[in-house]
Image (cartoon, rainbow, N blue to C red; front, side, top):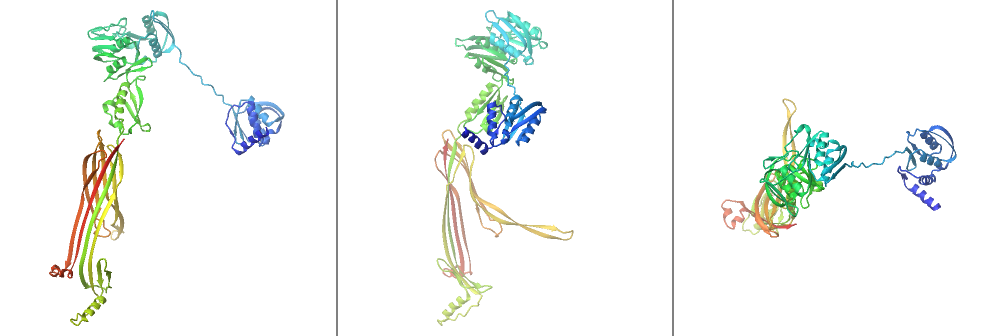
Length: 639
């Protein structure tokens, strides 16, 4: 016992104690206060109280204050009480109040919250009233005891019991009706029933009863037209045999129907009667039909009849609901989910004629369409969506960019002259000769020549210089890049590789100070210029896995600058091609080739053109530059 108490104390001190408001038994509440009183001794203090008509809230507050307890009391606990507590513990008082005054206790840490218990009423399930209607199929007698019952529910139960179908005018569909008839013929009961509830009815040749407000129909109504004849409300027999309309039932339970200009309502009624189908008609069926079908089910016949009309037939349990598609109970809402493609572009691909009369909403979160309308149209739309919901091929495109460049550069010549300042002897001798000789070096060479005594060339001034150059450079550049990009069938994939350079743009503006004076303000802005090699590919995969590729290549290169701060020249090379290859085959695209030849020179007239001597009396520069770009493309189709 001591061990259990110790565990309760540790659990209370080590965690934030919380007990939500609930109904306790006396034992549960006593155990709870015993565990709390271990650390809050005030609950074990004894009371000496004698109160008369003191409010419950004031009693609890005063006891808590006297014993240093953390208690919150609901001010609405204002009922007066009269009690004597002598040598009773504080926790016993709290337990007594809880059991006798319908209180709620809620423990939050060290705080006790006392509230009035809220009575929660149990939910009572209201079941629909069972209609007191009976039907004797042997003698076709009907009994009913109705008190403020819905006309729709009455017609539904009569249909289930007798198999006779009703068409209810929407204006009286929810009308409250009253009736009491005992074992009378069906039609007699119906006649008295509609009269006692200010309604009228007709029974047409198809055998179904049309209920309507009395003010909207004459006393005697033509029910149907068949083969040029009419029938009234008192007509009890239906005969489908005529030259214009015949209907027979097959041994399998299907129907053979032949109709020429026959009203839809008559075909529906006769087909339902022959098939033993129960149905409720929400609206009048206008229009005629001409058809000849054999061995067709009732549902298929309804679908054929109502094609290209606003009518629908939907099976709800054992009863068919027939009427205008917009009516509640006939219209249907369905979620059409896609499995293999995104919903984003599907709605735009559906023909407008197919969505006429339907409400179609994209549900992106579920990758689905929410469709509301007739069951027949929804089925047609669902079939179409299913036909386009196939796996979209993904095309992986391996692109290999091969760039090769060759450069040849030759500089040769001899130059002598006077500079503004004396020059030093400097330059390179190997691997190429590019030397500048100052006046000291030249004079030393002349002094050596003068030493032979043959001729005296004298000395040169200190500003005299000579330059000798004989340089040749060759370069071969090969760059290979092998990116891989993937895209869906019919979507564009783009690859771009390039560089960015910057140039300076100076802007001048005149800022006036007054009417006669002002100053000029300049600003400099650095702008960027891009040169890219971009490849755009759009694949189309055919059924035989041949891939048609629309390829666009654009190559841009930077040229020289006319000024260090000016933008560089930009050259463009573009081509576009449409090719067809088999899945996995490799194609090579080329033709982006650039050649440049630059041969310049300067020298002494006549002497610069004489062989051998031209090397000493001229300088020449030859540049040969050639570059070529090849693009290799390999499409691979995956599913």
